[in-house]
Length: 324
Image 1: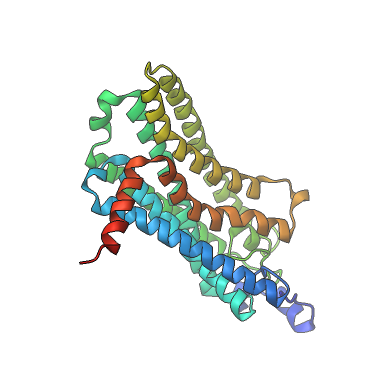
Image 2: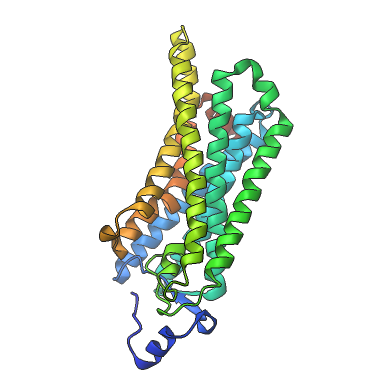
């Protein structure tokens, strides 16, 4: 359970800058010991499911020669971002729930913020690239091999990872250079930029807000591209004469659309809701879907409708359990 700084020593800490803060206090997932242990078990189950699902996708795509296509190459990269994001936030939350603590070191908080931003931004860029892959595959099939050759795919994936790295580095360095004058209590179960900005001194956060506005416009640009692409995709699919052809086209697009919708809706509602709706419990409830649930659900969403992927995963699992 979180303890707030109310004694004279704590008040002195609140007026100091970030150089005197050695740790932060994260928001506890529950107040009672029984609920803490329950949350630990739930997080353990979700993280194991995410590790298993994404691990199977990575192994199946890497080992299956017939899956060495642009769509599955980007799916492998997406699985890596899901593994990275859930391994960044969940282990610390599990540790705090199991040992009934809420502390995270200053450097640990900075590292967690950097890696979470890195993986979550890379996932968004990869989802945008995967949308482009579906657009070219359905709307410009004759140019697919030219526009999405192996070198082009490698360059796009590298650009997504490099852009995510620079974005995370920029925001982390700028956020943790701000002087903090309002204590060290974060209203979230992991380190996140909006919660740290609430601790910054008056008007010292305006520079970071400028970076956030730039990132929001970049994200909106990707969102507009995704929407425009899917409008063109659905128009092209509806013109396919055979029902089997339409079904095959939809089977490759719907999983991606479902993942994009889940990812975007949870993040947008969590960070763009009116300030009057903001509360620690609501912020916590809204952050769990995009930080914990989505990385675990993505493998299930992709494997449900993709027959090639299901067959490759089944072959991989059968080979693992087959007797020598």
